[in-house]
Structures are given as structure tokens and as C-alpha cells.
Amino acid sequence: MSFTHTPAGRVTEAGPRTEAEQQTRVDLAAAYRLAALNGWDDLVYTHVSASVPGELGHFLINPFGLAFDEVCASNLVKIDIEGNIVGASEHLVNATGFALHAAVHAARADAFCVMHLHNTAGVAVSAQPAGLLPASQHALRFYGHLAYHDYEGLAFTPTEGERLVAHLGNKPAMLLRNHGTLTAGRTVAEAYVLMATLIKACEIQLQAQACGSELVVPSDDVAARTADQLYDGGAIEGALEWPALLRKLDRSDRTYRD
Image (cartoon, rainbow, N blue to C red; front, side, top):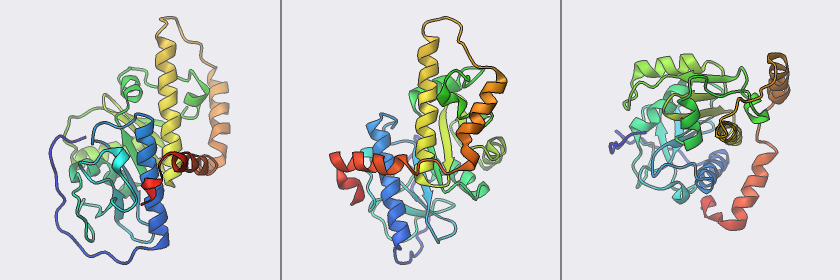
């Protein structure tokens, strides 16, 4: 999140849009619209970024200043790893906000899509010393697979980027203390479904804690076995859910495809 208006730097030429890029644009725009429908957005802040297929070092991100429910396939902006706009665009991007995403994209070849949000439940759980508890089946998806990064202030520096990716390691999700949630997916669908699962796990924890009683959690052996079952041998998540989510969007508003 950045409270400063940060336009990108130089503009470089872009090649013709491929079918694979267009599909990524549609999927990424859908992720923004679904996040808005779920109330996960934060005014015009936070981002979901995706790599451009076949274009090493190029990414797609939302236009800075548009709400998530205004994002569509055509107004997503193509940028390079430094946040410079690639090709023609009438929109600006928040290059400062992309810096966190850039660090993950650069460090992880499998991070095709990086989703970072400031959702209330995720921030609340990130502020708890124990973080996410293994108190629900949703939370067990992340048992042993969830990273943490301590808050270092508003400005995201290259040195913090090094620390963040070191903390993330090869894990699919992270709680940024006092800040929000982050997921990295091999597809847009995977990043989204991981985020949905993480947010629900945080919501369940907060509601369970609201009664003030001690929480019942499974044994370490059961938690580890369940996490392994949910990991499912490393299968890409979201393949089944994503078409259903797109159909849901199509029934209400297909303009994300424009």
C-alpha cells in the first residue's frame, strides 16, 4: 500500500497481444472483480499481478486510481519488473505498490500470479502473536505452509524485499504482520483460491475467538497429515473452482472481459 501517487517511468514498446496474454488478462480482471464482490478491496490500494505469458520480465497490474470493480481485461497495464509501462496505456500504475510483487515474481519462478490484500480478517490474525492457528480445516491447508514477515513500515525497500522473499521461501502464502495477506500461484486461479482459503481460515479463527473460550485444535500428527492431504501432491489449485467463479461473474456482469 502506498499513499503517494507514483507514476511509472519510461515507456517501452510492446509486441502484439497473444491469445495467452488475452486469457491472462481476462483471468486477472476476474480476480479483481471477485475480490471486490467479496469486500476484499481497500479503496484503490493493493494489487494482484500476473506474468505475461511468453514475455520474460513483463507483468500485468491494475491501473492506479481505479476501483477493483472497474478493472477489465483491456485496462490492465503491462509493466516491466521496475514498474515501467510497456506499450501504450492511458493509465498510470503504482510502481511503489508493485515493488512487493516484483520481489516475489523475481525470486519465484512459480509465482505466475501474486495477490496481496489488506482484508480485515487477515490483518487481524497477522497481528496475533501465534498467527494462524490450526483451528479449522481451512487453516490446516496452511499448516507448515504459511510464512510470516514482520512489519517494517510503509516504504518497501529492496533490502526488505530480500528479507520478505527469504521468509516466504517456497511457501504459497504469507501473513505480513500488521499489514495483510499474500499468496503466490502458478495460475491466477490458484492465487485466488489460496487467498480465499486463507481469508476464510482467518475469519473462522476470529469468530471462534470471539466467544472467549479456549479453542480445540487437532494434534500435530493429525494437522500434518491433513495438510499433506490438502496439498494433494502439489496439484495446482483452482482448476475446478475457477470456471464456476467465472460463470458466477458472467451471470452478473461480463464487463470484466472487455
